Amino acid sequence: MKRKAGQDRTLTRNWRPATQAVRGGTARSEYGETSEALFLTSGYCYDSAEEAAARFRGDEKGMTYSRLQNPTVEMLEQRLALMEGAEACRASASGMAAMTAALMSTLSAGDHLLAGRSLFGSCRVLVDTILPRFGIETTTVDGRDSDAFRKAMRPNTKAIFVETPANPTLDIVDIGAVADIAHDGGALLFVDNAFASPIVQRPLDLGADIVGYSATKLMDGQGRVLGGAVMGPEKWMEETYLAFTRHTGPVLSAFNAWVLLKSLETLDLRVRRACDNALKVADALEARVPRLLYPGLESHPQQALAMRQMTAGGTILALHLDGGRAQAHGLLDALRLVDISNNVGDSRSLMTHPASTTHAAVAEPVRAEMGVGEGMLRLSVGLEDADDVIDDLDQALKAVGL
Ligand SMILES: *Cc1c(COP(=O)(O)O)cnc(C)c1O
Image (cartoon, rainbow, N blue to C red; front, side):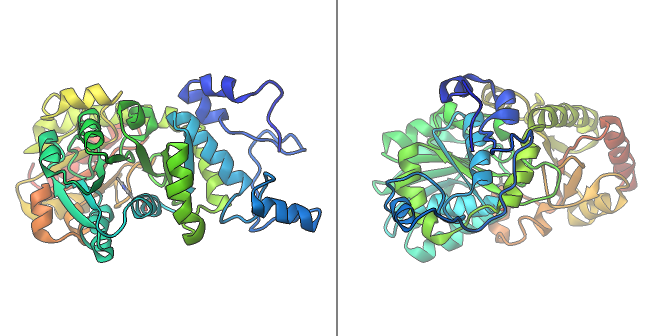
């Protein structure tokens, strides 16, 4: 595997994110292929017994086993790190593999984790149910209130974990303010950036220590593969994250890494277009829905903060209807173009009822506290003509009397 002559690390580091998304991390084989090669191999062979021994001692660089290294996966990891401005990146089998490994590798029995209360359903289960089984204390606070984080810090708080914009409530967490609180207490700030993508928000530049992704969402963005990624300082990656994942193995397959490399080439185009479409849809529907939340609209209570942290309002809208589950399900059933699906960040516009799908595993009182009511719908706006999405929602709203 070689890099182009003159294509040293300094030069590639200076490329802007849209260029990194197309070219970052590319390593060509002896055949000089244009597109990245897919190395569908679990293991590697050595020229001699001593070479094998040297690689295992760490004296010689090179691949040993695809749980540890794979050329296609490494291209993706380098590309993501360059796009994000991170020292190091590791890809994982799914977004949940990324979040679980990042937190479990950092926390031990007796440590305290503080989290924003509005989280993706499985992240909430991880915080509320799974981590406490291993002796990790966890508390959740209203992520919109930075002071609440300061008040909830304990001497043993080792990490703060937030999602912003949060799924599905679209709460915004002030990353810079919460990073200062974490650092004052000797803790690390972890940000789940799946809803924004590196095109819209760069948590590390705002003060976060670790950023995690579900690559399944905007990064693939075409509903094909699951994937995840964790990025942060080289030292943490080596001594904490890899010390855990090398032996527990939540790694990404080479095939999915190859699909994601192709997806990233169009990430900038896709995310910008989907954000433009989401703003158009939000503008058109705002007056038709009892409460519609979109971080790019003035009516979002945290619009100013959102626009300080993000380059656009994102691709997700939350609609709150007054008629409970019956009206929300009725609207979904009346859709003709938008699909009923719990996925987000797809080229297709997708809509779901979080209380009965993505957040069904979260206890009802916790859902109520988060603001996930029975009348709430989440819309992920895709790449269709925005007017067709608006027309479809218009007829579906009429069908339920709105
Ligand atoms: C989807 C999602 C996850 C989980 O990712 P998977 O790839 O489905 O495992 C985590 N956090 C957020 C914000 C998500 O939207």
